[in-house]
Image (cartoon, rainbow, N blue to C red; front, top):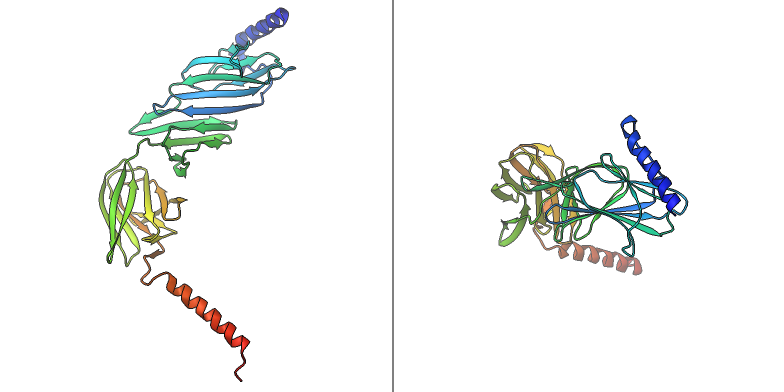
Length: 298
């Protein structure tokens, strides 16, 4: 065992010295699962669950960032021999091992950055990575598109992404009135909503935005305004996403790139007669036709 470890250390030192002359690679790419757990303060705890390999040395690339609390252990908490390739980001090299799973864990203090109330993670990676978020966070934005996660995490299958979210986001409630009915429309945003107006003839909701590039999530009662929706900023159509529907409300997300008047136009407003009337008429016609076919009055 000592010979194996000695040879392993010598090769590791050689790899470290050779770093200046090119990309350091020592060991095979591992079979692993990577998990990133982000807490409410933006600290990211990373876990690489590496499947042990009794025949081959393995090299694990860590995630860039200011690292602390590095540990390499088996599933029972026993320390495992390893080497560190001092490059950026560092790599962990594991000698051949009979252990079924090896856990490489560390914290990254600056993987997620807070700016103007928005937590942002700029991510580039080739490996599939599972992300988990603080409790009570139900919506994230990826590349300016909202995603409803509930209390779940996400699995990213590699590539470039900008992930953003807002913690403890306040919901602004606005009242829309049609005839004798009142409806609450929820607005989630970090900016101030200067104006709110529901217009029944035009089937639209209008509000004023004083900032550029803010997140907007509008929670619309389906009993007030039916989907699908179109969003206009200063009369220019903008991208939007109807990303969640709980059966009574629709979550509509968009990010205008300029300040101004926002118009949300739906297909239909509150029906002017009860919903059961068309159903009753349709059933009656079917019954009449069946009765007519059954009895020939000629």
